[in-house]
Image (cartoon, rainbow, N blue to C red; front, side, top):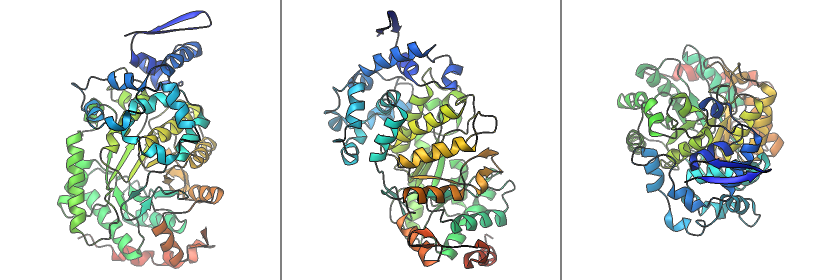
Length: 471
């Protein structure tokens, strides 16, 4: 099927729905690299005009990737809520955008139809929205999850403590964790990216983090962001797993390049839930997965099928929501300028990803980040961090001085998270906040400590490290 429109006396014809989607996307270096982007702004406007008149029913009935050859497409169709979709089916994408922005459409209203919104529908709406539109709609929606604590409630901003160490040194990792706790961070997760991908390393770090949480009493969860098979092998050896991590993408081929399948994710979730049932830990919910995504991942794996990176990112969220995760975050600027060239593209992608994930029912966070060869700087990160906080982002990263010395990229720091909480009047997760107040780290909802070097928790570091026994 072809689609045509006229813009300023020039006729534009698009040979497929996939081409309309790609050329309606805001400018991204990744789409240009793939050879599917609009050639100029006039063609982009023409594609947006065509897209605005396409119905949601047509999008559902025209899979961009054949479900006979792609398990992600099959998952999207098999899990679609047909009954909930009935009131939306006849809307055009333009009308859907207007419905989302309407003041009468509340977060609760949207929550009632989230399973009826296919990822491609969320992507289509995002292509017609301004940055402000993306913020306004996302801010309506709260997707709440529970593991050891409760994340995503209105008025709550979580922070992941990311204590990466270039040599996986336990002392360095635990020292960073304690520093993060003293800033009121760590309620989202204490999550380590290991420098060495081995079962032994992952098991040692998991035991160490679990012992620190047990000794300190902090009501939060831990995670080691290794490949899912490495984590499950560590689990077999007796290592404790709170959240099971995996990067995911929007096509079967891209996921295969990560060494995963939907069946492997299902198995991992089931084994983690069984493991939780056997541990003497107070779980308050069954959200046990942690996923990371990012625009451009399918293209970098040469597994994009000619689909634009925004739409493929939405499809990755379709994968994620099938597993009821506790955390999802877009690592928005990590892949590099080949996919998101500069500050403008990174900010736009971050707002798009957050909007689409929230619209699809996910507990969305964002690693507001960039690589050192991108046309961006820390002011760029501050801009996106502030916009996403206004949009109701569930959580951000907490990295010492915003500089990850192991992964060699720039992110957000502990004090960045504290600044956003203060600026917007937000609090940590409620269970975690009660612990912070009990320990004297927070008073009246605000950080209460002055000289961190004198705080008792820091003084306990040596005993915490001494209490770690993984043998």
